[in-house]
Amino acid sequence: MQIILPEKIRSIISVLNHGGYSAHAVGGCVRDMLMGNQPQDWDITTSARPEQVKRLFKITFDTGLKHGTVTVNFAGQLCEITTWRTDLCYSNHRHPEQVRFTDSLEADLARRDFTINAMAFHPDEGITDPFGGMEDIGKKRIRSVGDPAGRFNEDALRMLRAIRFSAQLGFDIEEPTYDAIKDLHGDIAYISFERIRTELDKILSSVHPEKLALIWDTRLSDHIFPGIPAFPESCVKACHSPYTGKGQVFILSSLFFGAFNKDRDKHAETLLRRLKYDNRTISGVKKVLWAAETLKTPSLRNIRLASHLYGAIASEMAANILALGGSWHNKGIFATNLSQIAEQQRLLISGADLIGRGIGEGREIGAILSLLHLCIHEKPQLNDPEILLMLSEELHGKLHRHNLL
Ligand code: ATP
Ligand code: MG
Image (cartoon, rainbow, N blue to C red; front, top):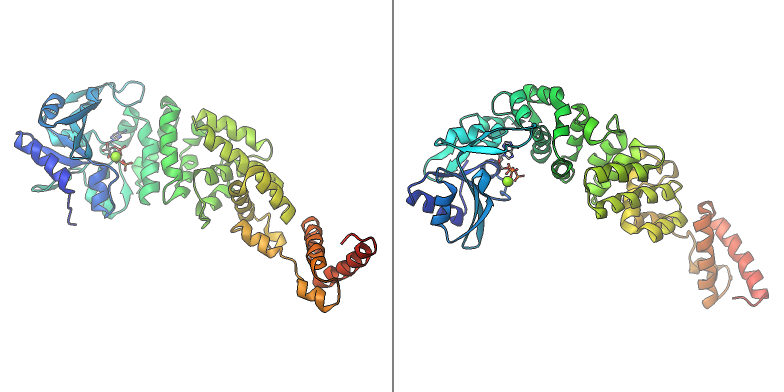
């Protein structure tokens, strides 16, 4: 695999090298490049201390001096440069309070969470991969650097990160690593809900949101989603659904829809607030759950009502969740989108049919058709050509007599 670093990242590395320091691209960007994906951001690991880095570049920001990180703006390219370090003093199973700078690249790679994240790259030296990260990319597996239990003990968030990477990359978590998550799942309680939510969001918006199931399989769910003892079938289906509006709100709504039989909106609000979700997501999920209540009985009337009260997007999501649950299949309706449903509820006679039968003329036709529309919104069974023609004759006669047309 040929790795070509962007010009400006090469220049940053070269500035550090010319300053007498070692410097490599590291972590997620190396992993992504090896997999042929575009890295989201660029991290550099260096033997230079933060103050030495700051002396070499004009524009720098002290993003995490305590952890050895300086952000550099090099000709518009932002890049985090972190001094080689080992982590010390993990207190309370969280990320380290204190770090110690080291003089070895390998020691820096050893503090990283998974083998696929513990590789470095230099344009002249190639890949540094002391823990078999390349092999694990080939085998599509997530494996802890070193003893998994020890590593999760240091920082419990890594358990959820393993699931997150598995969802983003479509990899499996290798057995000893996975077993350690199952053993230590309770430690996730040491991690703040904000950090948990960040990982959760990455899972929900990944290409494999169905990996959410691992949260229940490992029992991390005991802490993250108390009151939802099993991963609901509706959510499994939502994760696999081809529905194009899939996303956090859709999947979370399907989760609460399947997990609870009543007061779904209240349960959703409580759990999402606890996870520090923003108001927009919470109200989005509640609207979908309310729309689902309205749409349980599928009729154009209810679709109109739900769209009016909760908006077309929430209604469409609700219709899809109901369709996945089978509630709508009985009616022969599969909700891929609301306009399709509306189309299926189109009147089965036209103005031409009325004219052909000598029922009404001109404007009268339009008035009769709109009354027939109202009838089928209320009672879809009336949408039958014979019944509709009968109703038209009746309506035309009566309304004409009373001068109402
Ligand atoms: P992303 O594409 O989401 O940015 P990433 O691998 O770059 O993925 P980051 O969270 O940005 O992930 O972290 C950058 C690197 O820092 C990781 O690749 C990993 O080497 C290391 N790292 C981050 N968080 C941890 C952690 N909790 N424990 C150990 N190493 C970590
Ligand atoms: Mg990153």
